[in-house]
Image (tube, rainbow, N blue to C red; front, side, top):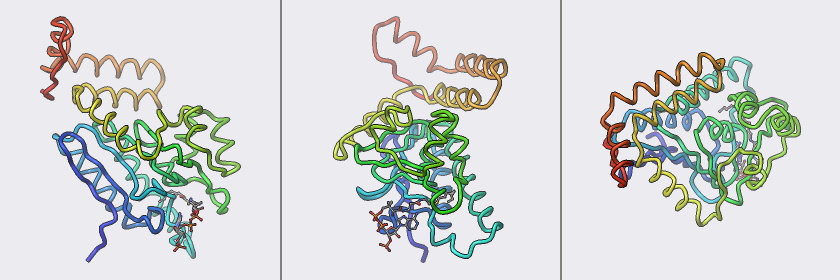
Length: 260
Ligand code: CO8
């Protein structure tokens, strides 16, 4: 029987994906990646789920990176296959039509940090350590780390972090804009739930269109990205949620977004 290394639990409108390999600090082997892809796909397709939280089991690690045991004796073709498998996972995170929040509860290194960088929002425990230490293993980040870190925090930060391979503490990551907020470890789950509830109360259609526009903004030129944003904006006017948002404001009450 295959071990359960990733779980996807749904509570109301919030889906939580947890990597469960605490003895190996939740390192990503081939089976974890397979189960992660499956879990993201299921929660992405589940219309009742409006927000996805991604975290790691235990109080030591979010994900401490790729499983280094799989690197021993690996050929360039093996490494390519690992990276391609991983890319399907990060593509699924960025392509999920709803917000994905990385809840970083400890070591967030290498492929673990790359997973977090592919999420929409990152929040962290004060005890978390974030970094791309691959250079210390004689390799470089192979899961989009050089690209996403450069785009999110700028080339200077990306060079400092990838060239030294030294992890940074959560408060430093906050100062660099890499995480949105930092919480005492015992407060992290509560903070994640509060953020998820806040996002889940919004119009899911508008959020999906917003995420799509933000994704396009990262890569496209200003003119094309603004055109895409205009289309996404206009599409929202096909929904009952848009009517509800405007009416609720004018009637001075909280909107109730039904996802229609
Ligand atoms: N792979 C495999 N096992 C790991 C990993 C890992 N990445 N990280 C930790 N473990 C295991 C340890 O081997 C140890 O196992 P055991 O108890 O059987 O000896 C157990 O987890 C606990 O770890 P430590 O005893 O080392 O705990 P410490 O508190 O002493 O240290 C550290 C914690 C600092 C996090 C340390 O474990 C460490 O440096 N880990 C490796 C971090 C790292 O280099 N990550 C990057 C890996 S390369 C990568 O991610 C490339 C990404 C490419 C794209 C993605 C493809 C999937």
